[in-house]
Length: 462
Image (tube, rainbow, N blue to C red; front, top):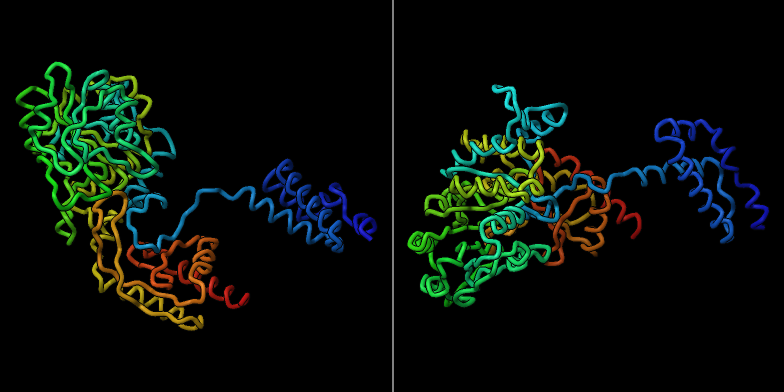
């Protein structure tokens, strides 16, 4: 039977005569269409050999189109973040403001004055496009932008401390996401790591005892970012370290990790050190991320003393870690929002942090009403959102989430992730929770349709 069924399968040439296949060739090219067509036929042959009847030509054409769609679908695409984690590292960190997105689209569409001084009619520097704004916002003498904070740390240590000593507290030898460890970066830079104090208690005298004025290049402070030291603990303030550094003419570097320009205490959160506070305390170099609490594109910000920033800019490694025009213009647009006092209105991270519980409850109830015919128990419950992104560890924001009570929350979560656009939620107390704090308002309709389809599919199979 299988041989007779195999003979029923049309040839590649015969299928190529079909109008639907010709349309696919016109859209996607002959080579890709042929590849998908042959794969569809191979699958059909295997089906026949397994004892099934030969599929019709229409089925093979549909399978070809399906395979083409899968082959050409990008692997990176938008996701609805309903987890309540605002700066979700795995979901792309900070969403960009409308102003930043528009600026990046505009600058990428054609030529620009990236490295051209229009007034002088000669070559210019790409670094001026964000440096002036960073200096104005932070009080620093000069600034440099690289592609992320790890690069900022590596460039600074390589330039200022290669083959010399860098003092750091044992309590600050942190590891952040992806296994990135401060000691590893220091070794890569060629700097010699000198650990001082203990894990829980470090004093200024510990730095002073380990300091060698001719060998010590930097005193480094690293913000804990994603963990807390509590209990019997002590660390010197940045001002105290600066005082010691001034006494021996040794610069102090402050790696803030996430970094912020706004005071988080005004939003009901614990205090996160701001970049401008570090500059005001006298730090010679301050590094921070651009795509976390700052709310801009991925970037590493380096601000500080003009002579030291000039050295960083001249180092060959600076070219290897430099940013492109879209990053610079996106960062510029983000910084302009801060300069105009519009950060909490325009920048999604701060808008989410600043959203009151009452507004979140209204959105969750709106979702609940839209899904009331789905046949699933729905309730609006009190929950907690987190900032994420390695900042403000242990800090939460009160929220109201839509809770779905289903036999298998894991199965429903998987269905939502498999939808388009995918929706990522969280499971608590054996319920699936969707937190409106991190769902962009323009995504509400897509979210509701995705949940409705996932629930309908679930009932259809149960």
